[in-house]
Amino acid sequence: MQFRAVHENYNVSDLEVSLRFYREALGLEEVRRKQTDKFTIVFLKNGNSDFELELTQLKDHPQKYDLGECEFHLAITADNYQEALKFHQKNGWVCFVNEAMGIYFIEDPDGYWIEILPPQK
Image (cartoon, rainbow, N blue to C red; front, side, top):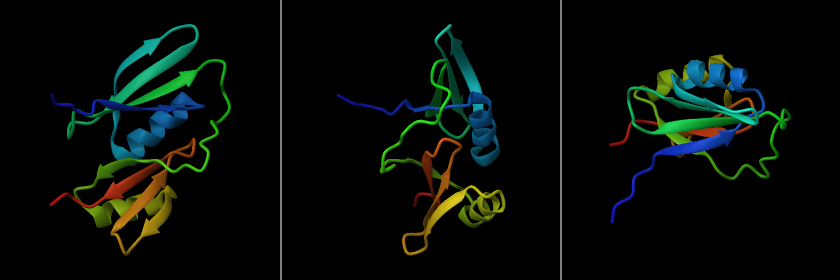
């Protein structure tokens, strides 16, 4: 039996703001969308991976979500780690740098953290 990660879901308070963040910060683009009178779901990805990020906006929940202590994150590799760090710092998205581990985190508009890693060896 084999398993493969397909997508991660984040509930967001403002879908358009989140779409812009993920496009500008990580190059993720919308690949499909599902809308009902209660919610909108948008799947994002780029050409580097089959993995998708699912953003869900519930129509009756416009406020930000309580993420608790935010002890979870999505991890993404950057082909040019130093260039990515400078770009994310310039845009004010970096929320934590761990120089000893050689990683940093950016924070999306709803407070979700994304770990940025150097290329996997």
